[in-house]
Length: 436
Image (cartoon, rainbow, N blue to C red; front, side, top):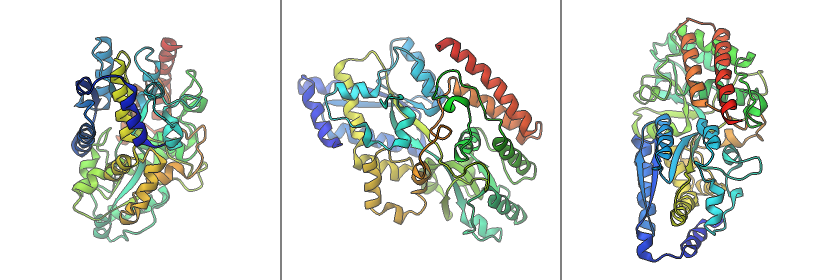
């Protein structure tokens, strides 16, 4: 797909004067702060400077949950933005919001350009498409979890920073050495449900939920309390008891601990690269997410996190033309490759991935290619395509509560995950009743 050609074609499809174009404002609500917020603002500035037909105004609306809630409230009040950034667990909620969204494939087709969904990487695109392959939302920032290594912390503990950490068994041995060597934070994690249950399940090709993790319909039930998940959480619970795993919070609070040099190992989004690269005053590596050797069919493939951009219903045709122009701009190989290289988010198009490789970025920055390889190394299965569950934000809150009980020693892994399934299934049934 020739994105520049598409962008040019958009300008000729809407019969408005240049002055009218200049007055067409596009509101984009997002959840980014810090370095990611700066990079998003730079993209907006670049787009606005590249043409004189549209002006994009980006507004931060809080964290992912808060941004989703703000968008829902705005739609009910008839004051919705044109674009709303929604994290991946809100996908089913947005799909069920009948009349609130305008599918991306419709926006792009109506704009009159040569929109080619096959230009997008399948493992990313598939999360946000219908069974027929129609793109519902735009996969703006897609990430997958990796393992960050503080090489200096390993050296300080008397360990070889190049030691193999491919499996969780090997990580366990490293944690023993780090603890014995004086580390006060051998291991921390961000996004514990996403990494240590959702991706753990996909990585080992076991179900997190029935019916292809919810892609098969509303009747899904959670399956996160299976033997693989219980064994992993049990091991982490023991590490927590022994002071080898330090719990820092439900989101990415542990990022500050790792970037500050306190923690030796950190499981986090590939998009954590932007902050680590900018702030870390120590040598670090990016390694693949570990798996349990001999368990399930690991390694299969990891699944994405991050967010997509949903186009809200109720806007004017010329405004949708501006949205299409922006999405085309964001997909262009040069813009997308730069975004991937700056943030650690996955390149969403094959052209961006190829350009990044041609520019020598992966050779100059070892480890930055790992996220993409994890996603594309094997063809996704029904267990590893992704998750599409109603009320998933609330279900994650339940999972967080139950995992915290394990880390505190108040519940066994089996008890906690059995409870998470029971409580989560209740929310799924309510969502099914409301949207069936």
